[in-house]
Length: 206
Image (cartoon, rainbow, N blue to C red; front, side):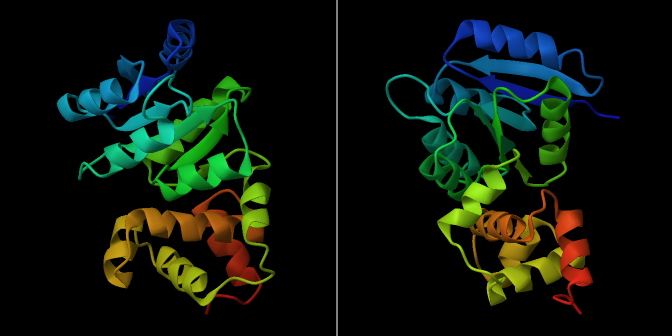
């Protein structure tokens, strides 16, 4: 099975070294490159065969992790970007999701949680740290799923990828992820499978 090639982006060398040491203990993960800033991250993606980018939010002066995520996702056949940070403000979370991030984790996550999140992001799933889903829900506290969220969940239930859903509904992949993240928050779940299962159980999908 092909290994998952990861780019680690953090402005602290010690953090990058620690993440490399942790990730290279996993069976399927290879740290293919490192970067300390947005320019380095974008350059590494352009020249390397990267599957998942592990992105810090704060990258010193210049473009932050959200800006870097948006630029990487705009490259076309871009890798998944998983935010790994110490910051969890509502604004940071929503900006990251809207920029196209595949997930949002905190640096106090257990090592196996991080490994599983990278594998899930590589599969095209959205990964949210515990509590982040609730924060997203607070951004738009609607008690029921919107028609657009239901429409997207129906397509997910049919096996469609985020890219395929975006093409069918004439919206961006980042917008699909934002709708899914909010649907996850309202349903209190963390994966596509759980969302579809719960929505069916509640009679929301037919």
